[in-house]
Image (cartoon, rainbow, N blue to C red; front, side, top):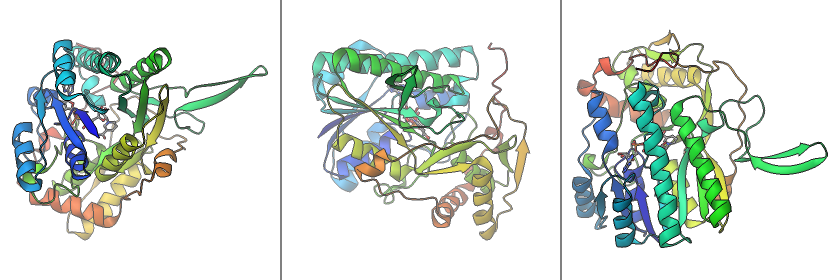
Length: 386
Ligand SMILES: NC(=O)c1ccc[n+]([C@@H]2O[C@H](COP(=O)([O-])OP(=O)(O)OC[C@H]3O[C@@H](n4cnc5c(N)ncnc54)[C@H](O)[C@@H]3O)[C@@H](O)[C@H]2O)c1
């Protein structure tokens, strides 16, 4: 299939591009390096340097023989979107191109506005481009499990059957996000649902949990092919952060009571989930919602797992309960469904000691590059925006 990956320079986008070409698909990537420029502005950087998209596509072509055209530009700009769609004519689109960090979205007024405008404008442009160029194109959009929040009832896959005063209707499952970033994802889902109903588009919205890991089948041969591994509070995801904190002898920063429970998945599972979604498209006029994670853990459980494995490798790996800068339940019920992707054929790769040990080994190899001052800057949820 001809697949256009929006956000192809990102943590998930680049590994997806390599994976899909290795599986025989014809892939192009689009990115404006927003993630890189926000990191530079905030003085944070990934653990290992990541070559730019042209350099990475060249490295991948020389090791694998697969060519990936790269379009560099801003998807909030219609002229650019128009040019990309005219040149590539995709059959499917994987839409990763958003500002993806909750703490960044809560940092200050300009970060909040950027997150809101960027995420919604890109999603709107993707919808408008599909309608204009080929309404049959399947949009695979990355949402987040954070859209559901932590309700005191079981979380279903996207939809809830409601009986009310003797009548019945299926609705989008109620959503109540815990950050502005997560709220933009809810708004994305609403936009997609509106245009699925109005224009009969074909959409899969993947409610993904936090992803961990750096290795994939395609990148082990060449360090130049690794994705970003951020460990700072703004852009790092929790397990990647804990691994690097353990190696840096920086006590793992558990927020508050540490009972916050979420669904997690390995980077390799993300690639398989997205591939399975593309290869088994939603029907025309369908908004298919799949919960994309493989296991649930509390923050305490994650920290304890990292501690146990890191200690067996000679690291101190202390854990420290820090004041929670966020506004969130620290102990709560959490029981989300996640059978849709398993039904499509996903074979999960669980968080084993071996997987953790490999991540710890990688972080240890690059220990000298760790800048501890990046790790915790206490972006508060309850401050006044400036
Ligand atoms: N990483 C996770 O744990 C996780 C979990 C749940 C959902 N998601 C979602 O998955 C998607 C990808 O996440 P990621 O971790 O790879 O983030 P990322 O920041 O590494 O990748 C997103 C990419 O999109 C690009 N981008 C953003 N706005 C753009 C624009 N206007 N024009 C062109 N390119 C633009 C960025 O430069 C970046 O390279 C996001 O939508 C995110 O919300 C990620």
